[in-house]
Amino acid sequence: MKVKDFLSESDQQQIIDAIKSAELNTSGEVRLHIENWCKNDALDKAVKVFYKLEMEKTELRNGVLFFVAVSDQKFAIIGDKGINQKVPDTFWDEIKSDMAVAFQKGQYANGLSAGILKAGEQLKAHFPYQSDDINELPDEISYGE
Image (cartoon, rainbow, N blue to C red):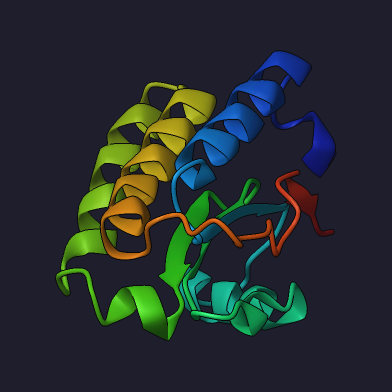
């Protein structure tokens, strides 16, 4: 399967809308990156992608990356140190658990959208929108091999 065929156009739009909604009242940034393969640990790969996408360069270090490896059926969520200092240690695992339930039903767009919106709630709580905020990272989905 081509990685860009994983989600339909409407699924992609649903997720982009969730990203925009999650970022609406916060300075935080959310990205989704999809690849076909992840031969090793998904979290390790997510860290590499996080830096490749330069997500650590947000002013308040409040970026969140959702990483999915389609063919290997792996996924991970990584938050930068700014948001990680604010949320409970179990926060990302709770979102992953909710997403896994949706994924098992084949509801990938719904699972991703719900996870993104839940992350957005915490970003809004800890990094509220400021009048001089700019969108530091693109909202579109990024794709790998």
